[in-house]
Image 1 (tube, one colour):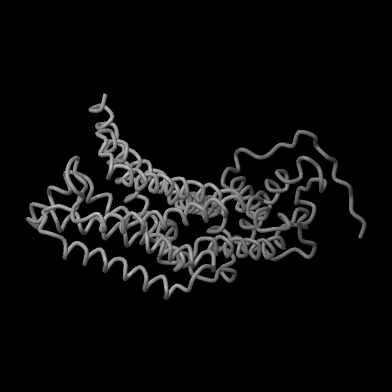
Image 2 (cartoon, rainbow, N blue to C red):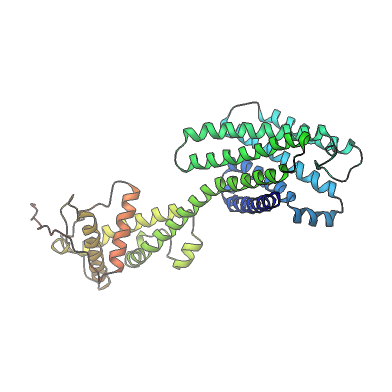
Length: 388
């Protein structure tokens, strides 16, 4: 039973370590843009480094290089302690409360230095560990200092995450809850060590490994939530640009004055955009609208199909009607025909906000790209003559 639990716990810890490294690497681009996230990313990366050095294959590989297992384990403990200090610093930045950050930095540096001093002044030893038998190495004071740092940081982090997750909504609430739960498992790991030192239960190492693995998985999930949302927004932006591209390209070809930049290859525009993708989409919408205002003068009013505003078919019907009008206007302008004195009128404005405007023009672009499948309203509405 103990062997099965040890194997399962080792698998969870290995998976958690890999997951947390993957989440950190995916989050690096966002941290370059937002300084507030850098502290959190550094803290998680330091914790991931400590978790990595706990893994037996990594530990043995480092020992072969350094030929000093004691230094490998000291580096593991210092990485974890540094992570605890950075977590507290991040909490001060986010909450804006607590002691001054400078004081925290001094206390953290003093505690890290004390770990090095306690290790250096301890009797000769080859490992910094709590073995199944014998006194803790390098000393009980070393371990109590390390445990105190972690438990203080983990307790504060759990409290802050719990408090702010209750005030937040949506993805932020989920991310904070997952990070707080992962930190709680890290705290449980160190509480377990606190009881393991006097008891030395043979079950403790497997349970501690399981707690550390769950800590890694949950923290990785909490970091992945905003990363996945950013990826989803990026994919949606690429999809929107792709769907607008044929319409925008054809309109800019006949009305080049509306384009801020000279059109580039579509693939280059998607992979290497000239600026934030949201801004590019907004600019495309503006340029398409400007081109529509110019091209409507090449279609007479009696050729522009319209639907009664407010009808169920108005939104989709106007999108298809506008697409037909643009195809006709483009042909007329390319053929050199003069503008009409009585141009077509645009019944549907597209919407009152950027989301509705984007949805409408994407429908127009879809109808423009597929002229063989025109929209047919379910309930045709007779067009009433308008008084002049």
